[in-house]
Image 1 (cartoon, one colour):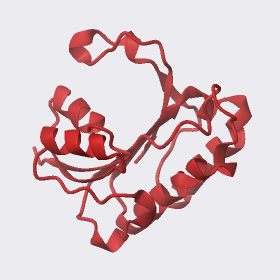
Image 2: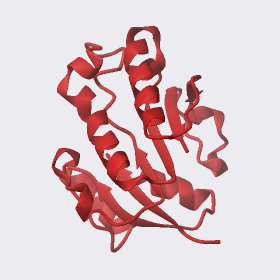
Image 3: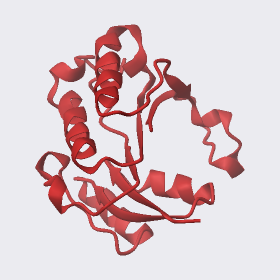
Image 4: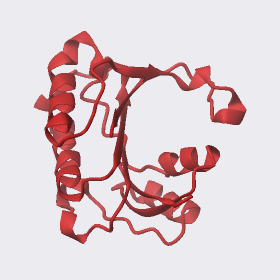
Length: 173
């Protein structure tokens, strides 16, 4: 089986990389985007020889390596019930557009985005529709129905965690 080439935005310590590893899916991390210096250091320790392309707002898409899978857990604070819920009216809420720029230029086979459950809730119906429609405009297939999941529903040996925190996943193929 050919290795999937992963580019991980808002990478943190590399959760997408660990999920693929846990699922025994052959892959290689060809790059990531992370601005937190400590997360960057941990990512590089865990996933050797992977370049950090830094701030997603400053990435020149032409400089990115080829990749098959784009993952991104973009900032949730603008969509979270515990925040002001300003969505795409807040700077962090607009970072989706930087994701879209990369997708438009690089056309990965699969895009997997993750955020808080409330992104697909009644307060953010417009933002949810914008994300779905803009991905479809790039010729991706995207489900109208949000895929909502909480890590506590998985057993620990499958990557489950003892937290009840629903997340919404957007898969585009």
